[in-house]
Image (tube, rainbow, N blue to C red):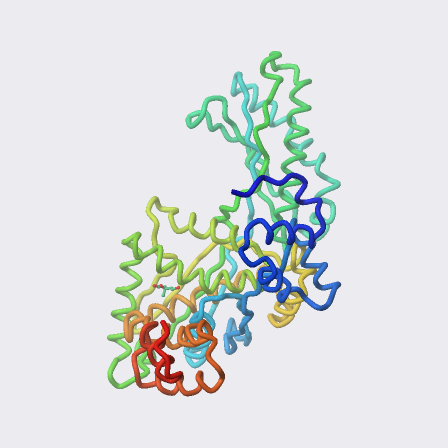
Amino acid sequence: MSKPITGFSKLSKSKKIDWMVDTYFSNPAEAQTVLKQYWNSNDKLQQLHDEFIENTISNYYLPLGVAPNFLINGTLYTIPMAIEESSVVAAASKAAKFWLERGGFKTKVISTTKIGQVHFNYQGDFGKLKQFFQEVKPKLITSTEAITKNMTKRGGGILDIELRDKTTDIDNYYQLHASFETLDAMGANFINSCLEQFAKTFKAEALTFNLFTEEEQHIDIIMSILSNYVPDCLVRAEVSCPVEDLSESKTLSGEAFAKKFIQAVTIAEVEPYRAVTHNKGIMNGIDAVVLATGNDFRAVEAGVHAYASKNGQYSSLTHAKVENGMFSFWMEIPLALGTVGGLTGLHPLVKLALELLHKPSAKDLMQIVAVAGLAQNFAALRSLTTTGIQEGHMKMHLMNILNQFEASTEEKSILTNYFKNNTISHTAVTEALNKLRGTSEK
Ligand code: MEV
């Protein structure tokens, strides 16, 4: 059993590693080597990564891939994707190419409002609280001027603050529910700083509001925090084409393809078990671009899944129909993204990803990310309703299995060739590799 350690964060990086490998590893020297082989030889770059978080011991690599040929509102994009799942970039590229030949993707930002709340307790008359709020509201706004000055100059800032009575849910519980426009910033720091200032001003001003009794004067602030639920920070992405143009082979007509595809979407609209997997596939595309562009994929995930339940049941984020001979497939999703601030100016690969995307505004990035999600869902449903997902998946997976067995370049070449005409499975690849090596190891 290891013992707890105090003052860990104050140890040097090498002392942290020494303690960790000596405490937990049967072969500490080997663990040291594994960690250190991921250190960057450029000390400045390594220090940058060390300082992103606390207690950094190494770097955790993910592949950064690109999917070219995305035509979005007439502009061609090559989309950067940071992801470990083997089939995602290939699927994105395939969907991009398919739609490139059919008019590309059309996108539109519907709204860009973000939300933050001050949660507080107040014991007293709601009428008086309302009166106090009306009186103090301008002061709440002016008290944040030092924080909002630059954002306001650029056309953003605080849009509104509402007082919300939540006492039907919890006794004495109220909110200051504020809306913000944060332009090209994701805005988390901006919103949280404004909210904390609102809370301070609100509490202090209540102490001198003459209609309040002594008990009413003591407003108890619970917390001040932005919401990652952003149903009014919404983007729409769509593809459409004549039904007959959907056909790519003589064996499947455009009409038959559209029928099955729409059925697959309808199932995800009504069946939560399927909807979760369907939407997970959408997030394969979305998270990969969100991560490559230095945005917060946890915030995006939380907001998107909440939005998928907005009607009371978890449902598909995408929709499809055929009308007047035209097939269309679309999605509206909430995305709070930034192209300034946070990692965007710090991480060299994030800067590179943003330049690759023509240095997008936050609104541009919302559209690109939504397209990556829609394309991914199109590719998934297309394989699911035609060949099945495993065919493409296992091809991509073959390389992972071969790498797991440290296959040489020659072995990889022979087996990639062999599996062009044979079914790929973990067992089949292991057996073929063993046969090639003349061994029977598992
Ligand atoms: C796998 O990561 C994603 C899929 O399961 C999505 C789907 O089923 O739609 C293929």
